[in-house]
Each structure stands twice: as structure tokens, then as C-alpha cells.
Image (cartoon, rainbow, N blue to C red; front, top):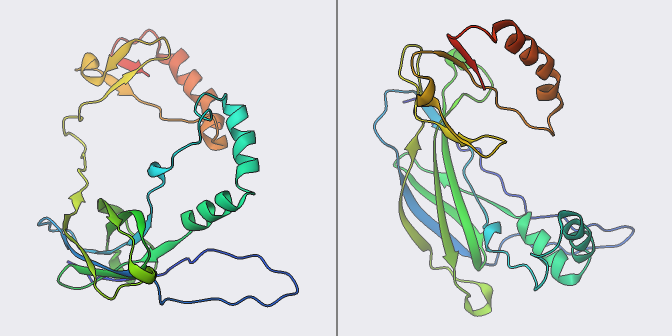
Length: 237
């Protein structure tokens, strides 16, 4: 195990002001959140990565009628809604990030977290050799959802204990290992499984229409497909 680092930081949100004074309160509300993260046994050298608490955005309830809107109508509705007092309060809360500090024994703590629904994320990264100053590959992550109930005056010194949270280590596939199971749906709606091509070379291309570099590679993929289209040993999907 390598040196553990806790690069704790907190984003309290932004309040735009111009030519005026604004009073900012730091801390003094919410309550502490504590627990313990369990890291399965591993021979890898690692340090703690990004550990934080954020608002659980999946709990957002759309007003009546919004779900039935077209994507364009939803976009227009949201652009107007975020200007309202309710929308401003929602987006401000979404921007809040609460730092989580993890101790050598796995015990963790975050302070001044107000009432609400949250998601806790803990992660470890590979320690870089020779003291290189960059983040190593992600080795594992833990995600835990929890709720902080309302408190009198919005403040409590009693920590909320979320208990033990087990970190799930990533499974790495090495050259020569059997590829993990993979199933998807084609654009024509048919089911496709990687096991259907057992014994063949399979080229899988993961791409997105919004990513320029991915789209730039499409001509190369078409060339490969044209070149090997009659080779029964290879499948390009």
C-alpha cells in the first residue's frame, strides 16, 4: 500500500455580485457525517483519490407535464425555470460539494452537511512510481446514498453515522484472459453478445456523436472494415 493522500476540498457554490458587499458564512450549519470505508485486500500500492459528498440529483421531481415534453421543450422550460427562486436554490445546492477526509484506518468524516439527499463517493488510485506528480489509474470506487433529516435550527453537533461502506475494486482484464460478458442492442433493435463471436478477433469501437476526436476516427474504422470485411476471423462492431 502506498502513501494515502487526502486532497480534501469543498465547493460552497457561487453568488454573483457587482459593486456591492455580500456576507458569506463558512460552516456553522448542517452536521458531521462519519463512517468507515472497507478496502478489500489488494497487493496494489494506492492512495486515496476523490472523496466527496454531493446532492443526489436523481431525487429531483419534475413539475406536472414536464415529463411529457419533447427534448427541445424541456430545454426551453429548464432555461426559464433556473431563473426562478426555486431553480436558483436547486442549482445552488447542486453545486455544493462537501469534502470527505479518510483516515489511515478507513474512518472518514465530512463536516457541515445540511439536511437533504446525498451520494457519497470514495475512490483509490494507483500510486505512481518514482514520485511522479500525476493521478494514477483508478483502482476502485465506493458509492453510497444516504439522507440527512431536518434538524432544529438547521444545525446538529451529533454526527450522522452512515456505517461501513465497502469499496469495490476494479477488475482488470490482461492479455490472454477470457473477455468478460458483454451484451448490447444494435441500432436495428437486435440483441448482440460478445460470446457470439467466440474464437474470433473482435474489434469493439466505443464512440459518441458529441465527441469530435471519436468522430474523426470513423474514417479509419470504415477503412478497416472495408479491408477485412471478407476475413471470417475478424468481427468489427
